[in-house]
Image 1 (tube, helix red, strand yellow):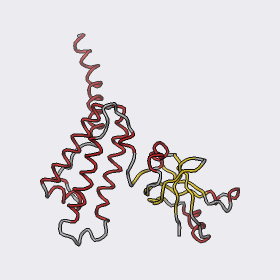
Image 2: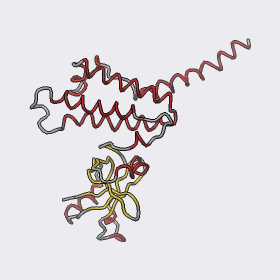
Image 3: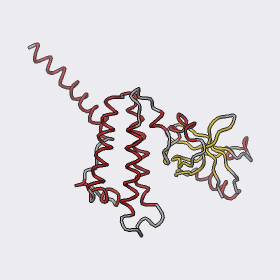
Image 4: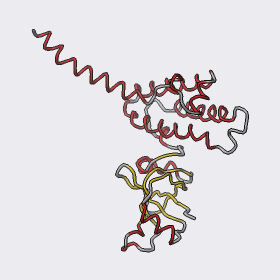
Amino acid sequence: MVKTRLRQVLAPVLALVSLSVTCSLAFSAPINCSLANDDVEKTICSRPSLIAQDKAISDKLAALELACPSLRMLLSQSQKYWLRERWDCRNVEGIFEKADGLATCLASRMGQRLQRLNETPKNCDPQTLAGGYRFVDPVHLLRFGDQYIGQTVSVNGRLDLDSCRASSAGSRSGGIVANHERFRVIFDAMPESRREWLCDQRPASQWEGIVKKDQQGVYLFLNMW
């Protein structure tokens, strides 16, 4: 009877632990080539060298997650940013006009990713993994913005202009909002017609600018012309 009750108690606990491990490792899984459905994944799956790089990245992510539990969230987030950069190989000018152009770009970016993962120190310092991504979000910049000063980044979120409020009319500042966080933005200039449209639509998009810093802290400098 005791053993039966113990099994009944432990079964759901073990199931939850198993689910937690499965979910936490999901972001590090290599490409399933039987499900490849876009140019990037198909290109990787067509070349053994790229498949090997993809597996090496996956193995390193899994090893880091086990060795550095404190980095689990950052590893997952940084992999998301990097996958966006991997996909962005498709947008390199003339990439499909060159023989093996996409494969060459992918090999380069995958090599850079693996190098960065390999440079993660044994003390699990998050700084190595935090900076240098092209596609990020406000939450990441609020935490690691100092590492991006002088870099061009593309920040995903909804654009919120201070000048949309009467109390801040004429302001060239605002913010990019995502996940209930707001990263400060300063505009080079804001044509009135553009300002009215932005205030009316409050669009969500990728906003590209340069990360800078003033007395108030780090911000994104946007040219809206």
